[in-house]
Length: 553
Image 1: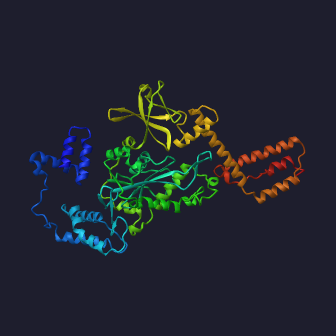
Image 2: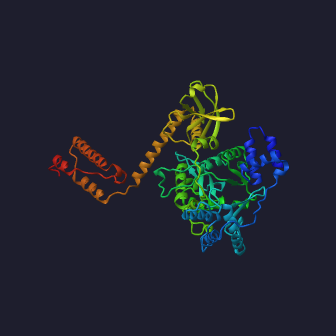
Image 3: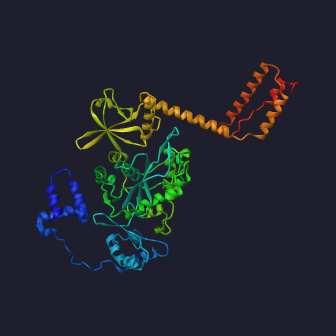
């Protein structure tokens, strides 16, 4: 009756669909069931709200052959270290029906009902238990008392943040600090679904960016040197988080409602082991082996951490992605038996996963800022000027800018029309179209330019970036030149040549110098790809020397 009253009060409002979905979650049924309930109430009144029982309730309608097949499949799938869930048994039932050419096979509810005695018996025999686990099944409890049995992939995702115990630098070599890592973990397979690595403190926006990465299919360039594919994607049924302020924000609630994801809070902090345990593994196996590692304890922090820090945010992100794809997701979990995390995720998929376009997720999951379009058709953001196609036609109007803080050289421009945002155009930072610049780096550059008493413009930012890259390239080249080992043969040739080749006059010395330059240039042209590996030696053209210095030679 409470649900019916709530629906009646919301009838005719724009948020009626939201109230319908909330009512369905409250009753533990689908939205269509709630709609049928309302129709029965209109036709029959209060009597229509009573659950209608079937006459054949309690009578088994499944054949004995199917019952034996279901129980046998479950028992064989849980021998030794193997673990098979009820959902996986149901998939085997459908495969068996296809092999037999039968369209009628037991449904999911029937399979679960037949396996319930087997599962309960296994739970009574189990001696070791951990929080949330009942035998081989994981059950998560929410703060409002709801219990969610985790039975397939993409059913429940968990999200959390941690501050990486590693110092990173910007492209100029200055220490930026310790970045924040946000991870999205699938509760069923313990597979890492998506991440976000950045310098910004935890917020609802970072959660949404990590969700966007987890939902979309992932493709990486050859610069990441991946041996495997990060094939996880999809939309979860539930998002299970702690009670932090960023997880209880209105923005995250709107995003999850738009995507049809149920937002659930943990009952207590100790229920977050699934999403928090990988952070310790990352520190132990990955971050602790890198220069600039600080450790978790301030008292034990190395004094050389700041001096040795040399990784940029992009370099660290590539290493983290490679570790997750090629090692962590390919590893075995203690609860998974002989399955890898990615293998369990793939076998736990019970249906074709839906695909969302990037534009659909841009509206929900990217950072946003309000700006006004100037008369010449550009907008100002982060001390940079942006121009986009047809943007001059909206001069004087306020627009919504959506961006990814990892790279702000390109932003998306929307216009608010009623309760919807309409995409207008892409806007690019003037002069920085071919560059990659994060929000934190742009802010650091602006501080340096202001400290020098100059005006922050697109050109000043571009000049700073290019000068910095040039300087770093020269430093690295000079460092490699100093580290090149000297060839013993070349040293001997130089010693002999200095003793046996006197210079007669300045003209001859100039000719000798020109010959050496031509020889080294010719060598660099022939071995261009490996020029950095060749030691810097003095090369003589003996035939030319014989012609020019015959009697002295």
